[in-house]
Length: 379
Image (spheres, one colour):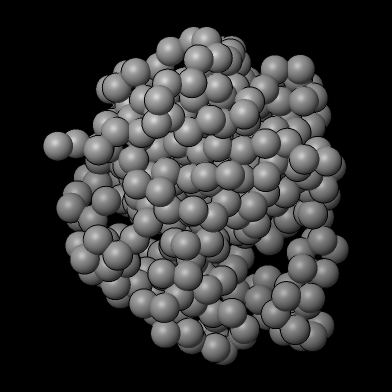
């Protein structure tokens, strides 16, 4: 007999409203969503806590942080993957697109190839049912590299590649138009001295000149071959957005200006911004603030980026800013699920996958009281 669970007397977060009600789950599926404060026998009394869909994360570098917790440290991969999976579950994320860089630079001392082997280890654990939440691949295709085409060819339609993003980190444009910001970042994160930095800049510019155009074309082809959605990254100008639209891109990661975000919406491209940007009140790179785009109506999706716990907090903060918690939570549930074609999740409705979280606001921060993935409690 299929096990059932009822979360009752909850503040349900639906796509366009919040209301007092209950959610009934049977096995891995939501089978009833009802309004009213009634508490059936054997139901869990949520005491007014918010109950909403599990969070959908499209771009996180968190797995890389577990694999390499310090420079030159390669942590045992199975342990790192399991720790990453558990951490995301503990923050309310029930679907994740694990970002892995493809496109290495063998002639340099950084950016070594790793994605193919790491993804195989990830899928081995998934086949063993060792993971708490749902994982897909997000391949970050770096055009300023030497091996992008070869690495793309190592993946196929069976690899659960759900998202491919075109990454162009040529110094002096996009995220780091301000070279002083790039210099501070590279010296701070990678310990570069002046000569190291100048060599790094020269190398990336040379790689863009030599391989950039071909890498863009081959990445677009690969995304189609995988059946994956294609995203742009750090668009800055309307012209760059027009190029993105020409590639068939449907998601813009972290546009750096109001001009680019507005152009994205003009072309029907969803805009994703970083949750840390919302919480900090601005970009660490000096680019446009997520709050500004939210106020202008040019923000659709949030990503935790480098702080998994930021996803729920930032969505709740947007809900409070907009005076509409359903709208705020939609940026981390229904909208990201829809943009990558996962129509079985992202909202509380009959027939949806039973990815559900329960939380209460405490001193302006959401405190989780339960996380369920496919109807199974994982945190």
